[in-house]
Image: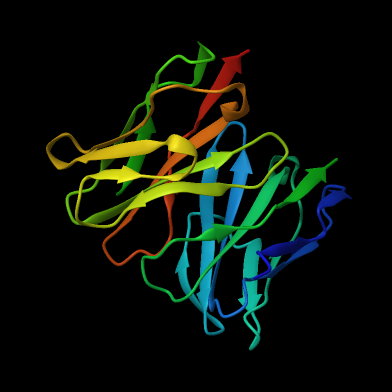
Length: 113
Length: 113
């Protein structure tokens, strides 16, 4: 079975721009979560989607948003980019919205200049 | 709120040395516990997990962890490390109704050949 895939793998943007990241979960998985990984803050939860509905949200500003499509693919959008948004953005999928094992993708490395 | 503490930021060992990485969490209810590993340039992979039952869990590559409820701990162990174990190790927890993971800051393990 193919793993979680994320596109693009690398991205360079400038302050004030917006960016959209994409995640395709493992086939059959209906829950997708997004995490931000930085050297200073570590891994922090952004949000979780299940059946096209946001189930849970971390402590991030409204500039960070997401959505999930009927095929369980998810996108994450960051508007008005700031330098501090430079990070590795990880997507994880699991079968349902319950407390199960999450499987992570390779991440999208975003650099904001 | 849930939180996870990993005691060591960076551990340096010689090959064949024994390893123990500490992990403590704060949450009063039932929790699921995980150790993930991130090898250089690779994505997060699940090492092992504890949901219920035997508090001593065995994972991949010879790793094991022991859940001690009274100490709110879930320490990772390996009797004899190899150079290929060089990686960053993350302890994570989810509990209550939350499907998302709360991660520790991670421990970098460097194994000298």
